[in-house]
Length: 176
Image (cartoon, rainbow, N blue to C red; front, side, top):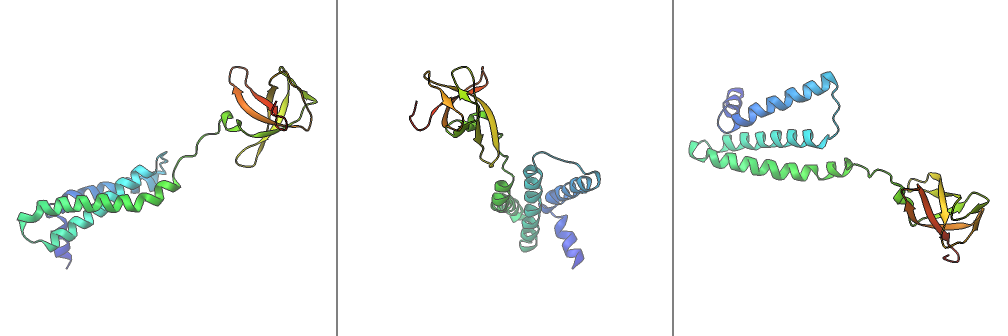
């Protein structure tokens, strides 16, 4: 039984993937021993899964087709099976590892804010705004259209001035 397994593992086309499986095993052993950290875990996992699945498909194909004439068909079939199964298996993994969008000041545009200074004018003011994660931030704001807002009023943030590093707001109840 073991000799049949070894014979299939070193027969063409399985031998190609047997070498790759050894490389993958060496890589993951190095990761485990050295504690390497990588920023994109999907790529090494994807390649590893593809190699192992393709190796297994090739091994099964080699055992089931003893004729050497069909070995290139086994190679093509193993590559196809490896690609399809890897793609299916990685669907949930990609969802888990999707990078979060970095927070941006523009995320506050369109949100309501509570005025925290005595007044907000075209030249001065601060308001408190709530982020998506539930946290709050006190931000610099300026009133649009020569209107003044007072402490406690709710304002709508409608634009961000990157040069001045402040948000433009209007009274949410009157729209200006």
